[in-house]
Length: 168
Image 1 (cartoon, one colour):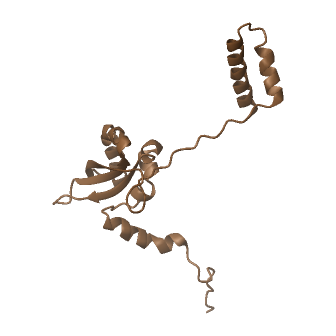
Image 2 (cartoon, rainbow, N blue to C red):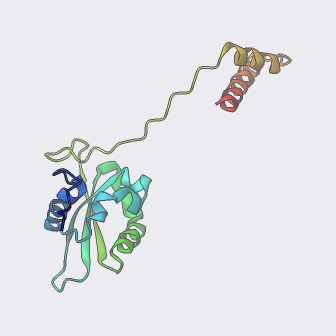
Image 3 (cartoon, rainbow, N blue to C red):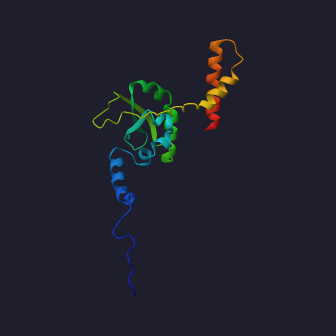
């Protein structure tokens, strides 16, 4: 019987090499579901993920009613405080049962702890494209009959914005 040749030539998928290490690291911080860490944005949504990160899960004496600790900056803590129940419901949906009974919020400076993990990314809005000379001319023609200079300038800017958006 012929021996089967290995097609991977000694290479292994990165995910298969890191799965055990990720699981071990996440379980050491109390995260039984590493998906909570790796897919945090999908679990709680973009708006909450932009201002908070999960830090720790601590379990009670009997193993029921764990507490999830979230890290955020001081200014965002009141926003998270108001959304605790929605966050708890979304996190418990990942676990499949009512694993998290309490959410604690930890505030820190924007620079953060040793790793600087408290700095949260903000979405960068793309710069508006400059209108072409043809668009500027068409906008000036559409607002040409207005006598007030301020109103005409505002209408020209509006027309430029509308025409630029319709071109893209």
